[in-house]
Structure formats: structure tokens, C-alpha cells
Length: 212
Image (cartoon, rainbow, N blue to C red; front, side, top):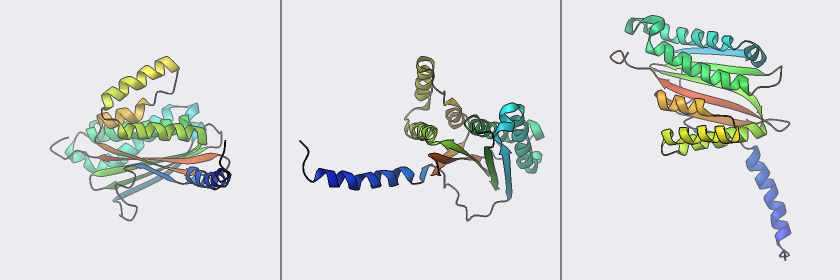
């Protein structure tokens, strides 16, 4: 049987659950560098997700554009467009923007990009709108990445799950964490109509002159 005071408690709990569901969520190292710090370089782009999906090569073109813009200041340390700095920034950027385009299914959906460079750290923000169902799955995946004791074991688990259950692989961000000196974070902000705004942020530490 239900206690007489259980119903009022449940009624009070529902608004609290709703408030928690609608609150912004910060994950990982999103605030590794605060917005108050002035960058040496600042780039902002708005790109149509539909344009990228109709020609995936555009993701590579944008990635190389951003990588060249940042790495041009370090050509004397490496080999220009063949440098580790250029290839790393291009690869990281392409992974982020392809993911955003893949899950922005409305024809009019926009992907908002912001790149800031601080001394030897490049920050890349890629923002897109998503269904709440997808953002919840994405948030769960990120929490798994941030808490996994061993990324190699997690990679095997994800690949096996994908093969068995025909799920989205979710392997791209994991590979970035494994292969590059990055910090990863995300901000999930609820919007109207059961949709969320997802901002994925990566900080990439450029190798020093002796490492290039």
C-alpha cells in the first residue's frame, strides 16, 4: 500500500526531476581555459550541416583551412603543411565537425565553430543542435570516456557492442583521447521542443620545437 504522504512527495519530486533534466550540464575539461582569457587567434564559422553531408570532402577542406591558419605561425619549427601540428589539428577538427554534421539531420541545421589559440594550446568548439534522445546517449558515452580506467579495454568493448547490437560506434572521440595530447569537454544546454544544444570542446597542446 502507498503511504498517505507519498503522493505529495512525488508531486514535489517531479518538478525537481524536470529541473535537473532541463539544466545545463558541463562535462570533462570544458573550462580548462576560461573565456576571460584573450586568445592570440580567434576564428568563428557557421556551416550548413546539409552542405557537409551532401559533400563530405568539405569537412576535410574546412579542417585543412583551420589547421593551416593555426600552424602557419609555426612553419619555422616543422615542415609546413606536412608538420605534426598541421596534421593533428586537421584530424581533430575533422572528427568533431563530421560528428556534428552526422547528427544534425534538419536541412536548415547550422554547425557553429569557434577556434581560439593560446600560445601553444588550440581550443576547438563545435556546436550543433540535437534531439534530446541523442544528446542523452551522447552524454552517457562521454561519461563513460571520462571514467574508463583503460581506454584500450573500452575500445574493445565499444567495438564488440557495435558489432553485436548494431549501435553507433562512438569510437572517434575515444581515438582522439588515445592518440593526441588533448583535453576534452562538452556543454549540453536544453532548448525548446525536446532538443538540446551540444558544444564539444577540445584543447590540443601543440608540440614544442624539439618535439616536431
